[in-house]
Amino acid sequence: DAGVTQSPTHLIKTRGQQVTLRCSPKSGHDTVSWYQQALGQGPQFIFQYYEEEERQRGNFPDRFSGHQFPNYSSELNVNALLLGDSALYLCASSPDRGYQLSGNTIYFGEGSWLTVV
Amino acid sequence: DAKTTQPPSMDCAEGRAANLPCNHSTISGNEYVYWYRQIHSQGPQYIIHGLKNNETNEMASLIITEDRKSSTLILPHATLRDTAVYYCIVRATGNQFYFGTGTSLTVIP
Image (cartoon, rainbow over all chains, first blue to last red; front, top):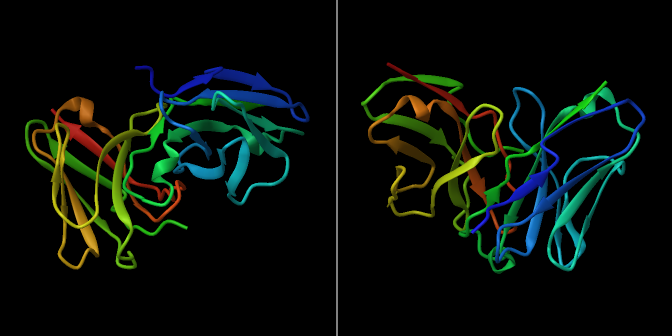
């Protein structure tokens, strides 16, 4: 059983460019969340997708957008990249049946390292 | 905002038990306590979670105080591979985690 998989693992972009990161959730999971982790900080919640809709959103600008596909995989898009967007981007998946019950387990992928130069 | 307070760093001798404390004084009755760890440059790894009873699995034990305002993660026999940042997280309904800065545990040979 594959866990949460993310691609690419590392990438370098230039300021002003756009980037797309991809995530495949763990088998049986239909909810995908994205987190940004700057160096030396804990991960910060960006948004969550369920049934192809954004269900929750953290304190991130509209330059950060996402998408969820019918197979539950997800993409994170960041437009007009800034130097401050350099970070580890983490995808986490969970089953929705846990949404109203907080006792289920959330699994994280290994992340995508984005460097903006 | 993070709802937990953890010491920024701790050391533990290899082979000894590592006891990592966490304060969550504002926890609500339906909020679970989760522990994850993150080894440098990797994604957070799930360790254990609990509501009010003590929990144990193959990785660790979780001791939650009776008033649920604090908890302790116990790694019974720490190894060098347990060196990581450990996050204590209180989670309400929904799947959003609020991470703090965690405890950086160093296991010393």
